[in-house]
Image (cartoon, rainbow, N blue to C red; front, top):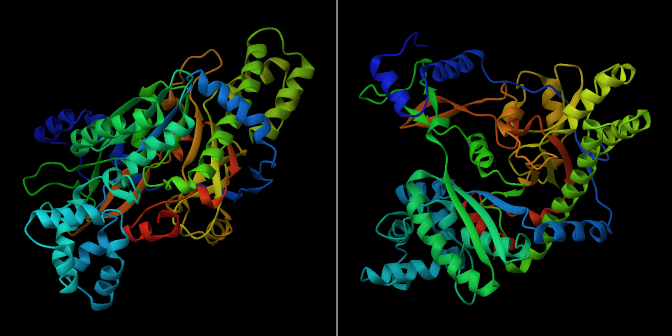
Length: 504
């Protein structure tokens, strides 16, 4: 790796909002290599994953409704994902049509919710979509879907793609999130708080579309949207390396900076200074006919978080005052172990009263997350595991495959035994027992950077990503996993996923 930066490098680094020292630390991470968790065992039902009883809603729904009326709850939607990956296969098909694939594309075309928009766009150009279909001119149709002369879907964010059919107008995924938010984050005064993170290049277009959509759904649902839009801070970008472990540069010699992954969004979440925040990805959204199940479990996750917060607040008030005798300490230890999955160091219970109070206070006074987990049905992505910590304890973490040592057969076997999957369905408590926002930066596991193999302009490169938002970015939070049904998980990773039954 390069030992020093040129004057031009330093200027570019500072213009990017970084310092040479920060970039040097990034290079040190490349030198160390990826951090691998030491998996102890997969989290399972009854061992790290809570399965709620059928009557849980009787207690949790009222708790959730009360705090929702008070305006404590908002929705956070990471929406900066570009649609280019969704259309990767279609883009290849456009360049090199394959008979079987192109015929399948033609058979399914009318089933996509963007078909009416495509028809109008082609008509404005002086052609007719039906005639192109009859003539088998699918290459032209693909161009109108993907390129700027048509729908430009290859260059739009996922948030602005039409996902679902409706009689009164088909909806984008952003619109669906507005609809869903009206169903479970509306407060007692009709305010509905929702925040989107978008890419800088899409911000103006997104805000224009969001403003138009809000007018429509605010009137329909009789709500007042209090929405926010932010971009991933360029200061969270990272440098990359080429195939020879040199800093990646443009032909001009300028350094190449890349987005630092979804872990960069922890800064956006921190700056919200929110209270109870529900997190869900932009592409995980069902149509109206399937929303009820999702809404039920969002309220259950949020209600359970509120239930835990009430106990934690009581205990922290007692620990910070004089209301924590020996019996109270035992009660708190039991709660931490049973309800928050906290594993104390060996010998903790033999410590003096003062030390136990201090440890309990530190353990309880942290951000809290309650995460939905679905049964693993082969979707790519991370899952819930018990991992070994440096002090000999165990903690619950969401682990990605890239965080598992590929050279260890034991670790790979543990990974393969996982029976649950992380759908990114979180209820987060971001304020402490005094009502002050936590500084979320203090609860990151800084070791958990990702080094991933990528390609750029046909070159193989090494990219660096910050500890993931729900991985290392929340590694030191108190964590509870709750089983949720697969019906609440409806991702769209490729365009063909829009043809799954849950999206039609």
